[in-house]
View (cartoon, rainbow, N blue to C red):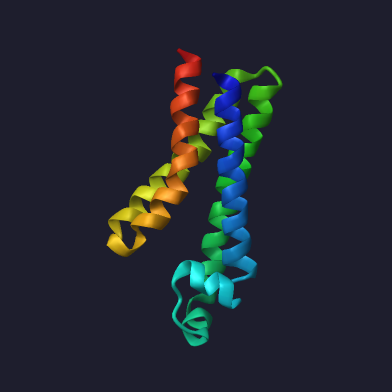
Length: 128
């Protein structure tokens, strides 16, 4: 069960690295604007600094989760689990905040929360 949790946490971390890249470096691209529902280049330009900052939050959550995976895989399960719970749990918490922002964000929040939530659940069961 730990192996499944680590794979799910790794997938969640990779997803958040991708979100980081889109928010911090590809924000002005038409394809990225479509993903985030940004109506115009002017709107994207107006929100670019906020998205750049937000992207790094996603990267930091991915790094925390990745370091946790490394510790857990190398035998330091307690340290690894704590870091995975912190990183993936924060991903889930951020998705909850997103879903409470309005119904337009429901789909994005579900996509953002699914992998880390599953990772946290499987990790909890692995530690029982």
